[in-house]
Image 1 (cartoon, rainbow, N blue to C red):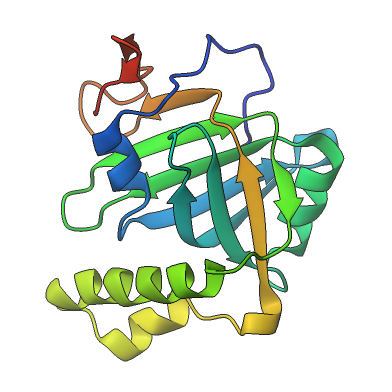
Image 2 (cartoon, helix red, strand yellow):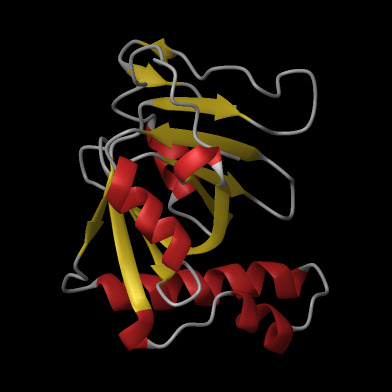
Length: 177
């Protein structure tokens, strides 16, 4: 899942409202980066906030479990984020070349707590034990880190014939997969 370092078409910005709601919802979030020699690193995201203008994203992660990915972002600012809704397998991938590690801000911990509850609740509704699913998104407050970025490319990744398709702008807004 190394972010593609080749030039991308112009970003699909602002994100369509429906896509922003999806990304900021109870989706499973995977974050990928590449280090020297294109060695990939992968970690789990702990929630995502889309800015009010739908142009910037903030994603949270556990720093101790994500040291290699954070080092990659600090070195080359590239990141791929995959969001998938377990109940439907609807999946989108966002890529960026401007990722920056940010300090936690007021309200971040509340957003993370809401994400955890919604994510675990969604999986519990599918029959997974809440206690086990909670471990997937566990991190102490002291271990939380944030990455801020502007998506430069967005792709449909839902299994099926449209997988890999670039999300294109329509009237200034990207369409949902």
